[in-house]
Length: 266
Image (cartoon, rainbow, N blue to C red):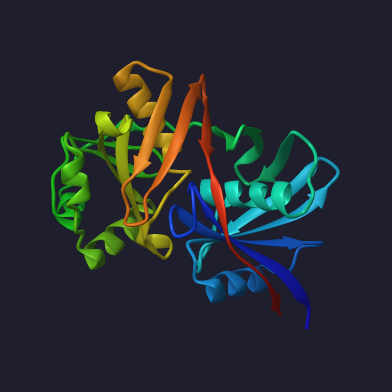
């Protein structure tokens, strides 16, 4: 048996029980993929992140309870929080090598700042099957890695009660998740609001999704004609991302809160 440290961090959260929980497991060397997936399944969180130190920084990988994914924002933020706060990382910026290229995380006051590649969506034909699965018809539909369904009122997004069986079938066939988004609440300082569904990778609804905002933020930045976008994911837990579009990159800022520190034996 091998003992490994495990941290559970609520990302894009000001305090525990908000934002999106991620497990973070620092490693000295990579374990077999089957073990990485088994640990993620046992954790039963949206994402478990693993990292290994290299000469250039850290290699970072992310697993849902079902599959490895190529990009995850909240678990990247959680991993940086563990390094900065618990493992004594003293540099100003952490560089992660990932399947989506190099990602960096720095700090601005009490915020972590992630630099991600943008993934803007392009208009596509409205899918009747997706509308039926969502139980509502958006004003427009776009597609990048995931579908982007645009509504004109955030109350319509908040009220969505998807048919999970239909949505799972659609997402598996399309090999894509589904973002529902709408203009935000000006009085609360939100430029846009969203929810994200990815039942095809074992996540019926994700609480707060950094990777989805690589698509959400370019759309609203263009529509609102502004580079700085405050985005709110209106899941049950909820979370806020403070974002900036810089050419083809997206800076995402958020906070993190500790929930659990422990040891697992595998």
